[in-house]
Image: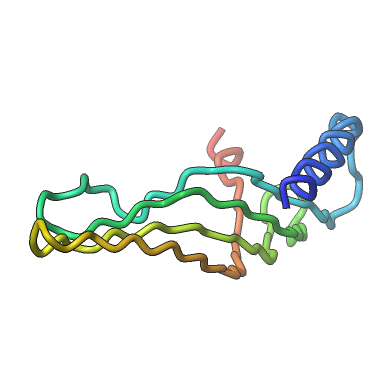
Length: 125
């Protein structure tokens, strides 16, 4: 898995060489990739005497598509993204004689974002 992430990271770095060229097309296709990250399930600190949940990292990869709806001021952007999360859950220690249970979980999330971008400040100058 780590070799796959490293290979994809290095191949995406080579795609940035054409980043400064102007694209005259009104349609754009892109790739997003996050090889490592931090994913705390909650923003609260662990409480004494209570179960706790911790994020142990994630990665995500996605495709994006952008279409100009109007010349230079209205754009629609959508895509498909997959992320894989790792979570560790610690149970409540009921008594000192009983050890707490630690459970490791994985889950995946598919998202389909939709964004409408409007540049309207140029109309106020």
